[in-house]
Length: 380
Image (tube, rainbow, N blue to C red; front, side, top):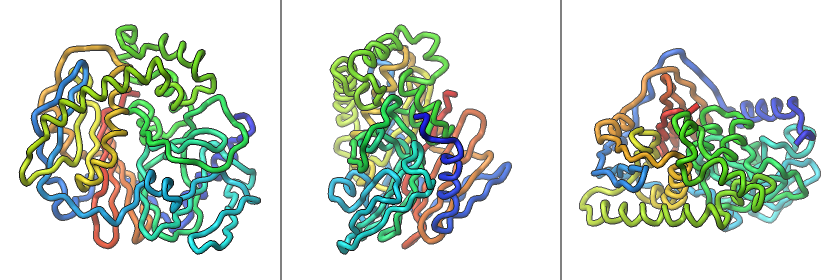
């Protein structure tokens, strides 16, 4: 890890800011931009509760057509998307089988917080903060939501490491079919700090409320420390949370939530599930909502597992959040706004107000469409 200089990391971030005509803007107090037609036709169903988690299904009668977008799992599995370490001496093949030299944006070889991505497909690629790619010199997660246009040149990809103790030979990555749990995802998507990401991986949760009562959690700090010592010496996210001791509890927990969720959402006419609002104990904490039920269905299995990890890392509190409190996570937030735009491709915007944060990703072509909305209560 000490091979990666602070200067290299900053120059990598500069490359992301300038490549492809990205434009940034911030205002001290601005409301989120209005959604496109049909968006926010959202309604909460009755809550699904198990142990210390409550999941409120979000349904809509106005789902959009999102079939033109490629997801990371699909792209990596088909070979249409390639994610690699940086390296000026590295070469890959384009969709037309032509050699493409990978740029070295940091001029210093591989970087902890930057990879190179090539979209060789004919569809724009959707990336979500917290999605994991496995391999290379370390496992990484996507730093923020974005869209990569079809046929784009190799571009720098902002990432965070979720494997603290490895920096070994490796070049390309495969899909891990994992989205890290909310405490880790928050540190990447909102706080955007590598050390905070590592701490959340090792600690399980960043919830201050949970920290004071962690021994009552299934995935207590002691359990996680023992798992790292015996099964995950490099502090790999995948090895920690998929180990025999931890993974079994997570899968059992997620399976029970899914059984209840399926019963609660079955047989709906004219409405489809497009997202969820999630509470732990009595605290509404997280929400993921998509433009269509197709996108939600694609991500739901990974998201459910991530929510389950978070629940097991928090105290087994039996309070239940109210539907009214969950409904507040469907409202637009007014506060400090930051935007990032790739003209003709996407607009990313974040609005923060105290502990609340709202992040939305809009596709700009062929017509404006909000693809994903993240709303969370910050834990740190």
